[in-house]
Length: 507
Ligand SMILES: Cc1ncc(COP(=O)(O)O)c(C=O)c1O
Image (cartoon, rainbow, N blue to C red; front, side):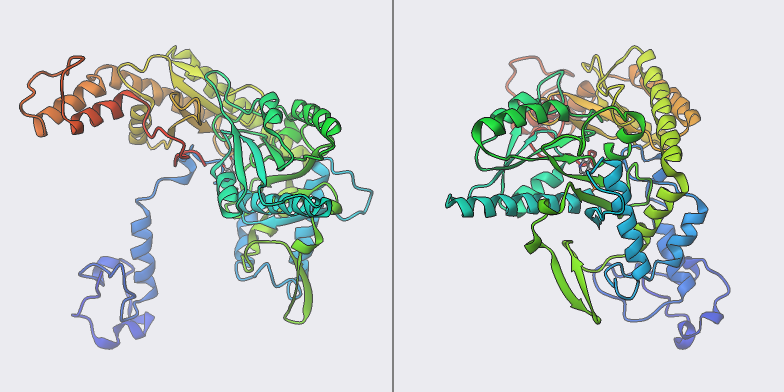
């Protein structure tokens, strides 16, 4: 919007001249979107303009697509506000913040059973999220592997990494940005995680690590890290290689220790050398914090650690970026000491029982198959038993009318013909909300049942608008139709967004 020219020239010089905060009183035309405006505006007007536009975003609390925390206690909000002006990297200036980060690393490494003596400092770093943590872990594996190959006088230009096809997009980014081949084990209908046997078959002398996921992004299922470890140990002792495992515990890292303490997936297993976890998922902190921890010092090559002489002190850093806010680190420390093991356990138990309420409600409609597991991250992933008339995308679109944001997406290769819906049950998703969501799913099903199938609707529309010469409502098999209509029909018949690309809804 451009500011009203009817206002006096010096109007915006003084904020005290404002009597109303409503932007419409101060603006007539659109603000420029591509060029910085020439003139300043009053702070109340700027606030109102932005806040009004943001009203059109979805409600984060009803965003059931995301694993990322959408509610924290007011006390921690205060701490976050108090530390918004601190740069995490100024370690010499903010030694207490640095100390809090180290305490978080120590607590998380011990939660994952790192073999540390009492008082021994764990090896790890705070990151922006699991993606940065994964880049760092991947780089450490690549460098370690290269060093070993160089010492043996062997080629070191074709590193690869073995994962399931269900890995999150950040692994593909790592592979592309850091020139590592990604060898993925394809999924199959009914089995939506990496098969450890097939993964170990793919391992060769150039494999820098195998990545196992604790809490697949698609359906929350835990991969069998223990079995993978057994198979890899056997292969390593046969071949003389030392192929390690990284566990991507982005969402499961703050679930398994509390709900399934007997499950062996972490540093208790010999080949597991590093683990990442998102502090901003079940670590219960707002977006912007993740962690990577290594089993021991020898797993992080020293040459990757930068010693920066900055503002008068030596700062060891291992991060991709330099500056970032300190508040999320402080918030993570708050959660760890505020909740303790007992508090995290009770929140995770609550999430699990709310996920069960939701899962039972969805199952009781008789219309869906459940693709998530009882043991795993508390998500409910489900797909229609019969999608001949309507599909999961229509359900997602119609749930939006009730305020719910539930993503529909397709499985990873080779199960991409399966499309599904996924609800992430977070701390702030109560049992009452779960029951309301089930009610609204019922309403959406009733609404869709009363409507003509989407395919018929779309074909009719396409005929009316683009293909007037085709008068029938349904195109019979074998009829010659134009490319544009054919594309419309194919796009509707098969799960949308087919292909090897990761979909937006899966984050
Ligand atoms: C298994 C897995 N790994 C990595 C990520 C990326 O995490 P972040 O958003 O913390 O970077 C996600 C995000 O959902 C995930 O589910």
